[in-house]
Image 1 (cartoon, rainbow, N blue to C red):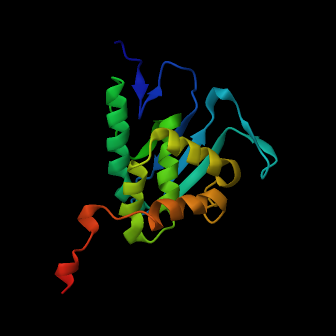
Image 2 (cartoon, rainbow, N blue to C red):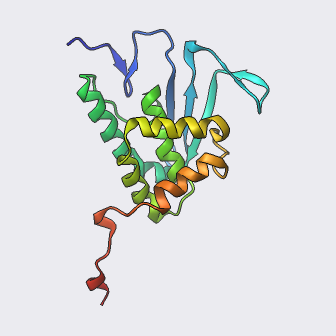
Image 3 (cartoon, rainbow, N blue to C red):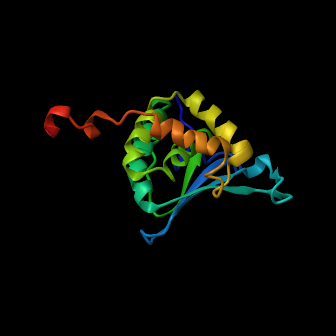
Amino acid sequence: MATRPQTGFGVPSSEIDPQHFIVKIKENARDNVTIIEDFGISGPKFDLDENAQLDQVVRCSIHPRRWRMVATPLKNMFNERLKSRKYPAGRWGPGDNKVHRLLGREMCVLLWAVEQCDEELVPAGINAWLGLRPEERWWLYAMAAYSSGKAGDHERGWRKAIRFGLTESAPLPDSYRTNFLDQL
């Protein structure tokens, strides 16, 4: 099976300006990581809040420490999916990291879940996110992006529901659970 040339995490390099996500990782490790949805040639989208056509929307700005907690699970999941389609693997690095539009939607769901939760709940959010099928992640993204999909909307609507649903109601992974007998 022939593979299409890819850049980043599955973004076709053979297409002219495809819709994709950009993960901006700054050289300074203390700066937030920014996730931007770039609509590409599919055209700008009308934004009611801005009352304008926008080519790009900032979907999330996450603290670098939280980013480091989720970066490896994201990379592993994405590369596993890319490998199954015989596409080259991607990696995170400083600068602009391109992510396929569908993988980017899934990534936003995880980042929205962990961006404002208590830090000890991040592993539970990752665990719950890994338990979802891609279609379920896409649906959650669509619900949240419509009404509360910008970087500053983390305390509104579906974004808040995603945070509580994936972190506060999810069990911690086995490696984070304490044994009752150890506490005696």
